[in-house]
Amino acid sequence: MDVFDYVIIGGGSAGCVIANRLVTAGASVCVLEAGPVDSNFFIHMPVGFVKTLFNPSLIWQFYSEPSEGSGGRKLYAPQGKTLGGSSSVNGMVYVRGQANDYNAWAQSGNRGWGYADVLPYFRRIESRMAPHDPNYRGSKGLLPVTDPDWRHPLCEAFIAGAQSIGLPRNADYNGATQEGTGYYQRTIAGARRISAARAYLYPVMKKPNIRVLTDAQASSLILDGKRVVGVSYRRGGVASEVRARREVIVSAGAINTPRLLQLSGIGNPDVLTRAGVTVRHALNGVGENLSDHYSPRLVASVKNIGTINGLVKGPRLMSEFLRWSLRKPSVLALSAAVCYAFGRSDPALDAPDYTIIFTPASYKDGQLGVLDDYPGITAGAWQMRPESTGYVHITSADVNTAPTIQPNYLAAEKDRRVLLHAIRSARRILQSQPMAAYYDAERLPGASLQTDDELLDFARRYGSSTYHLAGSCRMGPSTARNTVVNDQLRVHGLENLRIADSSVIPAMVSANTYATALLIGEKAADFILGREALADAA
Image (cartoon, rainbow, N blue to C red; front, top):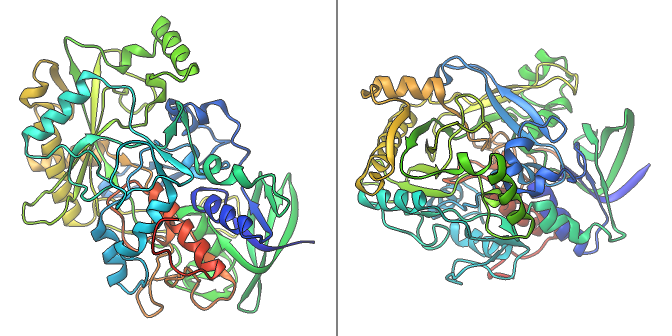
């Protein structure tokens, strides 16, 4: 039987960070990744995300349950299944969130997670490859964070349009303040995606004290009383076990982490009993508090100018491919969204509460990755800090049966109210004077839809997940409702078990969740190694 100091379940964003730090410190580490090596060509070409997101060999193809908020539809809820996890298939946009997000975590009883505590870790993560304020940004980290080197007149028009409705141009939303408009920062360098695997895992892969097992799906945790001692997994159809001398760290993501705990008999006894799983440790919060950003998209046709829709077809595509191959600016090296607008639905708020994303491209209705035949643009909108929460529950003891996923989109009145404001703000930007030379007609939701009820109905029928699932193994004191781990990421009531991934997020961040997952990985590594909290960027 294989024995290591630490076993990490999941070679995704946080798992790669933890593996790097533990191996560098001299510990022996085994990483179990359910998916394959990240050798697929489209992983490394940034625009390839439109293909990898639907590739079953690289993706857990989950779907959420129908709800009123989603217009009775099941919605796609993919999770990465390859080295790098979702960082190998995501849209590569890099957003930390707001100081208020992390201060709220600390105020809810999570010591060491306030903004002043996490800022040094954010600085340690990154190598900011653009002018920046060193008080907020890092320059010596493993992850390059870049600005887009391909620009389009429609992007400048969008930014000017956002300024025309009162949003300031902001050169660095990951710096002193988030509010404003500008270009998204990305985890792309040299025209290639830089995933957590490439930034963190590959630099230590050849060291003798790490073993990375791909195509190895964890089936259950091995418990000795209340002590977790190892992991059962299947690889190539063969059942195996690996033991941990010190700790097991679950970094399987917001769906698979609660799923694995429940399959192991850790969770709400009612959920486990219904699924036919013997209760080993009652912990009601497992799988609860699931949160996600829900986003409808506005689509318009444009005139007097081409968009990406026409640049990736026929001879133009070959030209762009050549430029990408030579690592020159190209549409093939773009992140999923190019520009942003972070705004406030109420001037009395002290920070933004909605996001608008912009791309000079448009997809056919219901066909992500299939571009429209006309020159089109897209603006997505969402409420940054949704109050609606749901759950992840297993329904069977079979590891191959997908769990029930219910985010309860738009269940909270505030979510609906802020989303309506975001939709109207996106409309104002697209129809603003700086866009007038290009704007042709609104294709979605359509000019005839004007009332709150009409726009909310549109959002329910056309909105989608942003794939920012989080919170299903919430961090907080054991006395708080539905918490699973403490502020050291140890699972309440169990020994030698930590969780480190987006599932521990106690309240949704005002951001895409990738940067936060890396933060959690960095913090977890210091907890595990018994290091003092970082006071300055390393």
